[in-house]
Length: 320
Image 1 (cartoon, rainbow, N blue to C red):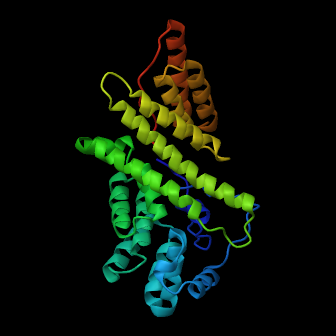
Image 2: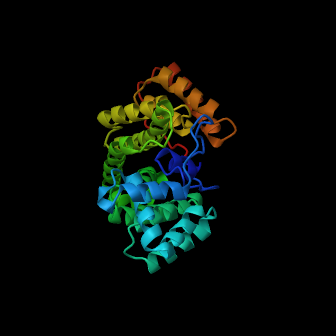
Image 3: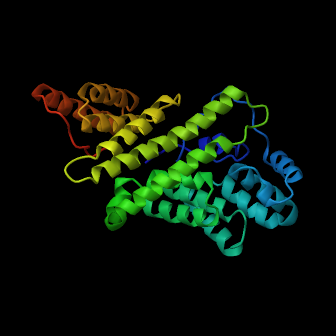
């Protein structure tokens, strides 16, 4: 499971004004050269002046801030309650604030986004069941909530989640595939921050998309494993493409994506590619369990290659 910070996602998907410290979903790897962000009040005022109704907002990311801007004028108490969620770094307190917000404002246009932050808080706590629960709540209210789509597609194919829902395995994986593809359609709508250089804007979008491609790679790898008589080749090919995209389109590839790509190559009998990819995973994951797993895979693959074997089944890997 990803373990970086939502602050990075918040910046990359256009919530530049929302400062969330200490959260654990996406890395805070916005380059130092990025333009300074607008302050919350300034951004909300800008959006409130440019959008007269919630439906006029041109993207899911602007929609949140548009609603926030309206609330500042119409319902400052609700706006302050939501702002408290945005500013809270303690996951347990975030969850309590979100649940309180949901009880007080069950019809709020911001409730879907509040649930996103609760899901992120549960991600910090390592609770896959609750992540899935709160992203489902969020997406039932706003199907195009990009934060929740990304969180959902990342958690649904995880072994620790799938194992508890074996009878619905196929349905869950197809749901994750659909949500991941929807997220990729929405990412181009991420608004560019004021004064943000085009190059930085493109990098931010690519970083978000890389997260989704990595999750989709896991989905297809899991779908490949469902086939009788060995991995399903078409799904393996899709997994390979998704992981390749994930690791080549960002400056900070996730070692787990390299590890999973190595699994795909191994399942396809591409020993040299698998060994090279596991080696990259080990280098990027230096000092973590990924390094240990990668070394074990390399040793096994070298033996298989020496024996002239043609293919291997995907093995258990560190959770994403």
